[in-house]
Length: 392
Ligand SMILES: Cc1cc2nc3c(=O)[nH]c(=O)nc-3n(C[C@H](O)[C@H](O)[C@H](O)COP(=O)(O)OP(=O)(O)OC[C@H]3O[C@@H](n4cnc5c(N)ncnc54)[C@H](O)[C@@H]3O)c2cc1C
Image (cartoon, rainbow, N blue to C red):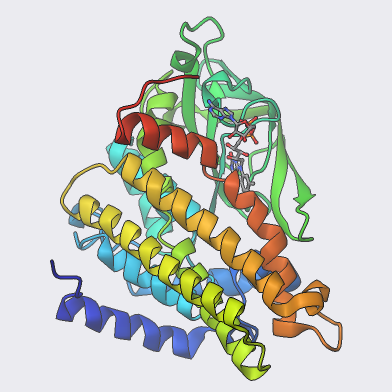
């Protein structure tokens, strides 16, 4: 077994690091910002868009796409290297919804016109996306979605409410799942996947502030929102199949293990500077560092499967579950390490690590829900990985 990257991949890593060294604002690197601390930085979205465009100019957001759509047909390891370096430099700039969900949906299920229309904006880092799947009464049970799109001559007219829409307040475009057939049996056969311009009249985006105090997601209301028929991906009433084929991509989040690894290194540095070590803390830190390696290898396995043209399924559920729960454990460890100082927030004179410790901890609870809950991941692993019976 050879875990080394090729010389070309190593050279790519150096190139990415050199660009980030130049472009990531010094303040972000000093404070070691991540996406999860972004509400504290009012310029987060400007920095995100600026770096995204720099990555886009290099063609780095589409390296593993087929060549006919502007990619270079390289292995998914290039995307993984890019995201590891972004994590290492605490840099925004990777639109995980546009690059990680919408582009694969269009590449897999979109028409030629859609590929030509939407992929260049994602590859250039100029068009930012959100996805509206969840509704107030339906999250895990996507098949029961109720937001309705009524067919008219040249368009569909959408009414209803979505919730937890990450980046809905920044996004230019939206990947929307809506019901187009109320009588469908089973109900998942009545859903359609639409691409929706967020400037379309009738869309209202209201902020939801999470318990860490960040404005990261939103509720989105649709009132007579008209979507042209050519914006359907994968066919009328076939939206559920589009989303199902995407979930394995979404679970391949490539980044959380890298962010957890960076954070554990930062906590070790903080402990060293403040002479905080006890045998128990050292032991825990070492265990978490080892867990970061396990998480990294689970992700590499998924990237390797993709590079061989295989579709990871329970394997991506495993890597997502493990890395998100690992980040929760690392975040909790930060609270133990800093003791009572862990409650201080940015602005307090004695706050450790610019207030990242409570911010990471409070944000980490959402990991058990986003991109499919931990319970659903465990069900996928039990049923498809271990062949156990379906009990719910
Ligand atoms: C930080 C964050 C960002 C998010 N961003 C987005 C976004 O951008 N777009 C979007 O559309 N959504 C987004 N979501 C919503 C997320 O996808 C949903 O929260 C998730 O799908 C769970 O749905 P729910 O909240 O309705 O919980 P429910 O589905 O009501 O589940 C409640 C509990 O029951 C368990 N449960 C439900 N069904 C089963 C089952 N069949 N087997 C076992 N256990 C089950 C769940 O695991 C959970 O513990 C985000 C959520 C968070 C926390």
